Image 1: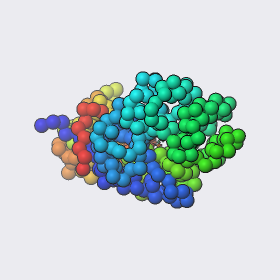
Image 2 (image 1 turned 135 degrees about the horizontal axis):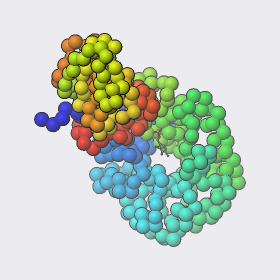
Image 3 (image 1 turned 90 degrees about the vertical axis):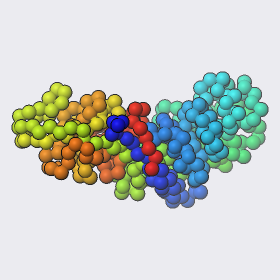
Image 4 (image 1 turned 30 degrees about the vertical axis):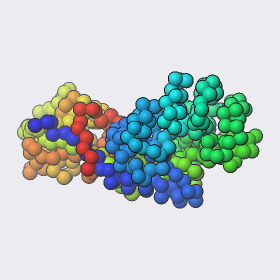
Length: 371
Ligand SMILES: *Cc1c(COP(=O)(O)O)cnc(C)c1O
């Protein structure tokens, strides 16, 4: 018998969430297409699995790693594939060209490399502007040089889909993030002031949070990530109320039960002290499976379909939960760590993180089964 832990990935839910993202984007009045963001192994859900599930509906796939992009091509994905950080060295450009990858250009060095490479085929370019996130992107004073490079690279063909303008919002997920979005949009527009042709170029701005809360920012292409996987980008709004369905469900079972007296302690450091006679269920799941070690005692967990809470510290391969009020539960009872019936966002909040991190951290040793 393998350990009873397993992550189920609900492919129908993934498709549902993708189509929901596109419907939300359409509220903005643009016929926005949607990049399915599948970076970080599709946020831990499995790149090829996610791509296969979305293969006939997604307008395109966005990720970071060139090898992963090549794997998508080899798996038969014909849609556009966007490299969200572009290429890293000139040596990457041959693969980009061979596999017709679209590239984010976020700095002048990349444009220099592109010019020197003299590729036989033009790569579709997403020109990333830094509108205030201050992570990646060109700033206003670099735009004249960028345009000069682009003129050489694209000739007068920048209006034929070869060039898209892009930026990224820093606070779309925050309550009151609207002011920051407005400010970034103004800066974005100002950066393009002396570039009349820019007005006719396609634009890509919105991540999940912006798609859901500010559909007017959904322009030609949106870039949903976390919402595809059923996570809410907002601390104050849960996924279910947004119409999102959980995709990953991390399941395990109770593998032992300890009946302890008041005053006994549980786990490393004895951080849980029983205040009454307590039935402690030991779950076959620990931080080496990707469950956050920082989830404190009291983190919600579902046993036998009923919600209870964890007790004490998370170990490498196990964690403890309270079965005192679940007398029917015992060895072998099914446990949901997150997913169906136990929102990942609730676990993430308890652990002081976000569902993105839980999904991405799912360990390789956990078998994944598509359902
Ligand atoms: C990861 C990423 C996204 C997706 O963000 P979510 O918050 O997961 O929707 C969109 N755009 C860029 C540039 C990204 O890196």
